[in-house]
Length: 76
Image (cartoon, helix red, strand yellow):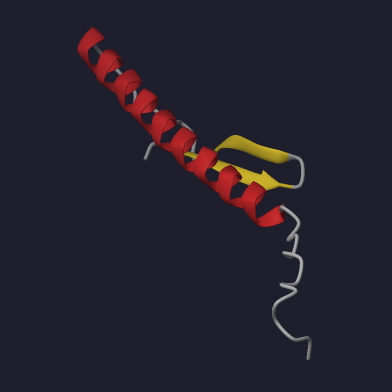
């Protein structure tokens, strides 16, 4: 990865740059294209991971609502 990651806290998730520069020095158009393509791929991977973490976190924070007791079962 080129130095893109994410951080999650109580306010949500955000993309962070963990390393500068995030792309190498480019001397021609092909290197520029390859570098930007790699950044886009990394952003897609970070996006998918962020969404999964947010889904899991949201799911875990949902209140647990117990089912009402079954009247056919005796109480202990």
